[in-house]
Amino acid sequence: MPELPEVETVRRMLEAHVVGRRIRAVKLSGLGLRGGESPRSVPRRVKDRRIEKLERHGKYLLIGLSDGITLLSHLGMSGRWLFHTEPPGRAPKHVHVRIAFDDGTELWFEDPRRFGMLRAVETAKRYDDPALAILGPDPLANAPDPEALATAARGLKVAIKNFLLDQKRIAGVGNIYASEVLHRALVDPRRRAGTIDSAEWKTIADEIVAVLGEAVDRMGTTFSMYRTLWNEPGQYGERLLVYDRAGEPCRRCGGPVRRIVQGQRSTYFCPKCQSRAKTERIPHKTAAPRSKNRSRNPLPRGRRTPTL
Image (tube, rainbow, N blue to C red; front, side, top):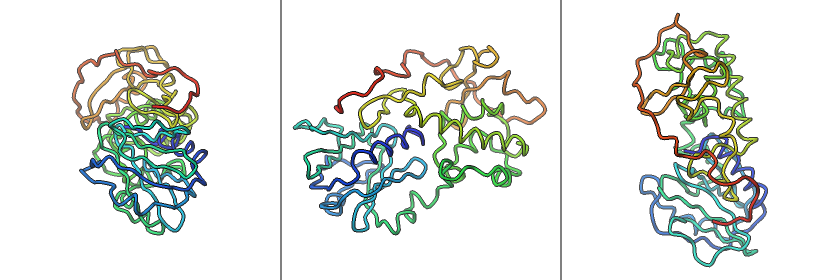
């Protein structure tokens, strides 16, 4: 699933290419997206409005339109926005929203798995939407406060990795970057959140900002389906220290990276670098080896003509 860096990459590209364009029409595939929800009210509510602003909170995109309407978008597992200066006459079957601008360009939302979300909300009440109202602070807009994190974690038995994935606490940190943050902070992902000391919280907070910022600079991470506005893969995969590197040597100490399962998700870490024997760890499942047939960057680097 695209995480904060991937969504921020899309936001920046949309901001550069669609702000100021007026929506002439919207075509829908007729199929539902997340939870079967259909964006059927979108065409009526956005027609003839101009795109004015692009915002992001956590993993959500907020496309601000003229006259007080915002398009709230989530990419889900396989969603992506694609911009066409010369759109093909016919969209592929997985394009569920096709926004046509009055200058002939088009913006498409493609989502093969249909776990994405798109709906029109009142701009003044956009943060009251149930999807956004439950989210914690955005770590790039507001750097995490180590003391606040320590207070929130006090007495908790949940693993620190799962604590970081709780979107009600920090909006936007997902599975890839949580593993990377904890490795750089030298914290065992199995540690109970309540056992993390103040110095460790300071390091974790700093690494959250650093890792996410570096990933944004390289357009995020692509393993399979994530693409930028120009259908390019993210380039942060080559910088990953532990994620998806089970059995490979740790880039810090040379020991083997290990994969376990926490909360039905893969966790990658270095048992040597991130070992803290003096603290209690939460039981976990031993993960079976994963196939290494996937390419982190399945498409060649470099800007290409926007196309599907």
